[in-house]
Length: 134
Image (cartoon, rainbow, N blue to C red):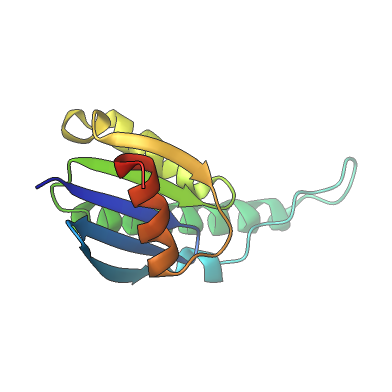
């Protein structure tokens, strides 16, 4: 029996739904990157000085937090036959790039789709529809 994973991901959390036959399990992982404010982009001709350095430090902290989060999510996927990545914004695409960079995962990536907030049951339904045609 083939195991599928539906992953809904954004800056704040990842919901991993593992599907095997008629059953599915749900795991939620939290990220701390969403709580780190994105640095404001300085307006043309506007101030500079220390605020640019502080903005860079905040962005670096956010990027490190996201990389740690992605590694945690990647380690939690298991060994599925196919993976569907869902979510709003760019986070899902960033994570898909990480999957594509890994030989053991690249061939398993079955799709990347825009999706608003979803429950585990919603993710399971969408994943089944994509991979099982149902």
